[in-house]
Length: 65
Image 1 (spheres, helix red, strand yellow):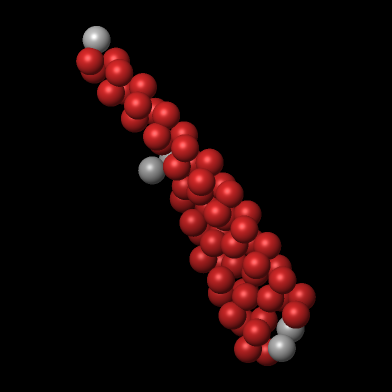
Image 2: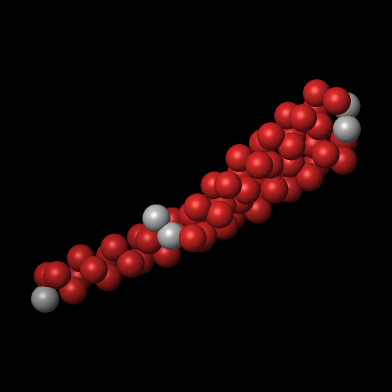
């Protein structure tokens, strides 16, 4: 697991907490910030997942040589 994956998943979790808290107290700005953090986290963790996939594929190809 790389830094992008970890940071992205943390942003997703933080965003979910903010979204739920915003809904609970009726704060639309907080809810929107939570949605934005979740989207950012998904993008960042997706980038990290892609990096890991490339790294693993390269390692597999090197091992076959």
